[in-house]
Amino acid sequence: MFRKWGSRFLLVIASVGLSLLLLEITIRLFGLTSIQRAAVEFDSVHQAAPRPGRPVTHLVLHPYLGYALRPSVGTPDRLELENYRSLRDDDFVIGIFGGSVARQLCILGSDAIVAELEQRRPELRGSIKVLEFGLGGYKQPQQLVSLSLLSVLGVPLDAVVNLDGYNEVAFGDQNARAGVHPIFPYYSTTAKLFSASSNEGSVAEFQLVATALGSRQRRDAIRGMVDRNRWLLYFESAKAILGAEIIRARNRSVAAEEKLTELSRETHASAQFDLPESCMMEAPPCQKLIVDIWSRSSREMALLASARGALYVHALQPNQYVENSKTLSEEERRTAYDPEQATAQAARRDYVRLRSEGQRLRDDGIDFHDLTMIFGQTQDTIYRDNCCHYNRRGYEIVGTKVAELLDEALDRNGGKGESLQPRGQQPDDF
Image (cartoon, rainbow, N blue to C red; front, top):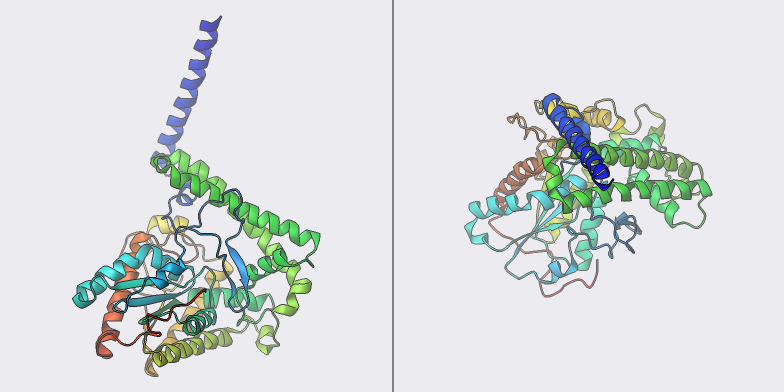
């Protein structure tokens, strides 16, 4: 009897194993489920997987910035306050400002910045520190406000690098279409946090918040599990299954957030984010205003950095929707290109204005650089999603270019300048 059941058990195990093997071979042979597999093939730039007792969102409302990282989250890539306090007088401190692309540049491209700058400036060897001040969804004037706060708090910077552009036109356009002034932070993010933190939210809003955050938690939990078990990445079938679940979780979160934005717009949150603006009635709305806010914010950042003796370098980030900026690989076309989405259309349309206004910034003495063509000579896969983000190789290319721009800025300014604040005066909190 036991021998009979044992034989059946082994037969089932063998059948399952054979089925998985056939699935693996089929996926590899025909290149199936490429989008799902790409959802798992990522560099570790996400938040840490949720743990018991940890809040399900790493963001909190911020009185000046709209939203910021929750101080208690303690994600692996979070810049700790001790990093400021440990700075030496002879350190060359570079602050990177912008949205998620700027943040990921710090995580995946800072080594390239340091290596290239040390090669060009041997006198800086061992003293270069790259500090992260970008956050997903940030757009001007959030970078300007961040720099102002850092200046008031006494955080020392020798160079300010502002890498932006996509969020301004993509999320500024989304704000305007929702009837929210483009000068405010991305409304989809702030509406979710506003509803979650308010005791005036409706039952429907709280349910949508729970769905959005729970879906994000599910997505991050899967990614955390893959991070702990990297051997799974050797199996295309495992990536396909896990990637499909990541995409399902992401789609549930996006759908909930879109509905939450509509509800919040109709109720109490609208009064927090409105300014009258005639361009809201245009189609598309507020294009010129969005670019003007971006340009004026950059000018103010340059003035603030200069007043504190710091270099200021403004770089327009590359994006796959800029015409003729890169020949996309087959993988990029499958996994990182969706020209029909609204944010992609805004980028394709409004990057023309950004590049034109950027030239005016440069003509007026702002150290502005258009990096939209930086990937033009590579046929390799660089873009890793249909928004704006790059793989590690992409960030290394951008990081190397940023170091080159800083080297040129140092030449024009006669070498390392005075920092924003003497190292002896350190902030108590930020």
